[in-house]
Amino acid sequence: MNSAHAAVDIEGAERSGQIVLVCEHASNAFPAPWGELGLTPDQRDAHIAWDPGALGLARGLAAKLEAPLVAACQSRLIYDLNRPPHHTGAMPVQSEIHEIPGNAGLTPDDRSARTEALYLPFHAALGGLVAERLARGQATALVTVHSFTPIWFGQPRAVEFGVIHDADPSFAQAVLEEARRVTELDTRLNEPYSGADGVCHTLALQATPMGLPNVMLELRNDLIADPAAQEAMAATLAPVLQAALSRITANNGEAA
Amino acid sequence: MNSAHAAVDIEGAERSGQIVLVCEHASNAFPAPWGELGLTPDQRDAHIAWDPGALGLARGLAAKLEAPLVAACQSRLIYDLNRPPHHTGAMPVQSEIHEIPGNAGLTPDDRSARTEALYLPFHAALGGLVAERLARGQATALVTVHSFTPIWFGQPRAVEFGVIHDADPSFAQAVLEEARRVTELDTRLNEPYSGADGVCHTLALQATPMGLPNVMLELRNDLIADPAAQEAMAATLAPVLQAALSRITANNGEAA
Image: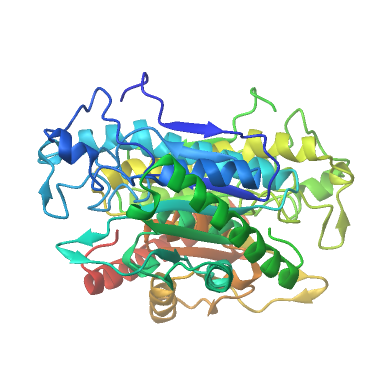
């Protein structure tokens, strides 16, 4: 366990917007004591290590939506915060075509130490922020912000904006409809993968048990490759999220 | 927030059985700073304040199943740990026919303080115990232990043993079948209430996101009214749980 490394970065905890943003794959930092896991610089920059562009997009959305943002501080290859501790993807020995040398042969103690140092504090901080809002009667919806690679195992992906949900599809469906109505993005529900693939752990852990509207946003990372593109995408998607949330809360009375 | 009051009691954290037991309504203690909430001694002893007999039953099961037991240390009327912070039942102003004077007119600060002092540490402790087991590869199933009153709003209840589930019904169905096969108890699925009534928050928060087998046990409290009856019921139900778990893990390969 490494008490020196911060497992979570919360920006704007006091912001009063209805949405709480989460970016589990924000960082490609490889801090001590885990270090670089035997990866090359190219590998540590690639999509296997993080979701390129996701943090910039999330920060742009946070500013426009007056939303708190909860972000990871280390590579998903050290611990993927969107997976439970017993999932093979939590500390993967392989990602796409790349072996992860520093994750080979992890002992139960190694897995326990990463879980305690990274997974538990991240989700405790997010859960505490959500619970505090709910205790005070603040309507809350959870939105996780991700990016995906345009080429996967050599195959190009046509989808540009994936909208993924956990058990309750209502917010995701409203986001899909709004995005198709007001943007040019090739927007699809549960692509390039779906909650059935186990990619919605944060939503399942933090939103579904609270009955909160929730959605996972997946942007193709070539569309958010630099700060200007991230800011433009945030300007496109912030009103989509706001309109979608207004629609479902008009139907339900309130968001939480 | 009251740092002096322990929000959770964990017995046998190191026990290596497959089941983790939880007793959210174990206690009718009314500790400072909340105190007795204006209730009479009879009200503080009654089923509205706790689940009479549940802790004794859970301890008996824990011993027979070599199971860790995570139990509450204060009345559910101060904070019902089986409800999220924005649920009206978390800090209820009324329970059955009884008004709860100390819960009338709670401010957002009051609700936040109870959430921080009681709900968050209880679920952090349980979640940490479960995550530690999963990180180490220990197969894990979650069982919550409750009791219900024989008379509710003046109506007698015939059901003796209620078996309630969250999203995945497989463990509960196996418990139902085993209980009907080897006991004389009037055993029913999702009675006297069901997960659809919002009574499965602990399962939804701690088991479902991890994909763990889970079930909520509800015993009619006249059947576990004293230590001898609790011990006898534990002796009856421990093999039911064990056989049910063996059956579903034989089907699935493993429990977690």
